[in-house]
Image (cartoon, rainbow, N blue to C red; front, top):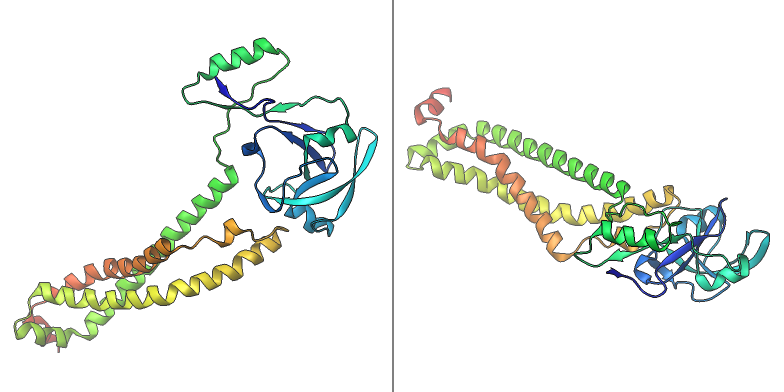
Length: 284
């Protein structure tokens, strides 16, 4: 059976030209997230995205005039919602009578219970009302979000590889500069394994310093760049964009610096450890 409320979640588009008013009723899980203010709970109230306010120079508690099918009424902006469309206004179903009295909903959002056979449910819906058109289910993932996350992952991997190569180059140069020292240490009994550990731990220490310094710098840059990007997109830097760093993640980021340093140092350190004492001293 379908898991819905009575009446089922639904909405109605009252106008086809921007801005569009969407009247909602039913389950609150299908509504946009409210960032500030509250969801409209009666006639004469609407909620809008931040881009709607920014593009029109409006703010919460301002009053605007809306029109549909020749009917005009004033509504007050009581909520800010998280959507990306600057031309959508959200209202409670109780406001329908003021603009489009007697109009039925044109969209129903249904969440089925686990184990529901979609074909059986779809057939039952069409049999009850042949005028309804069943659309494919949404997977809950925005294509824009997928692109952003994929680009971020690729960029992170590229930056990690560049950092590891930088460490690799540093260790190679460091080993070449310390060839005589390493030869002397091996001549007094240091094993190749100990030489490798020496070079790797020295780079690991730099990785710790890099992580400790880099994490706060990254947080500071994030708090500067994200609001600037949001402002360029005529949006606001909402909490889900700003509050992304938590203690476990910060610890992981700091540890990542150590891991990159160690991985970049292993190969050149092992190469330096394999050099014979005679070769090192002969080159000196």
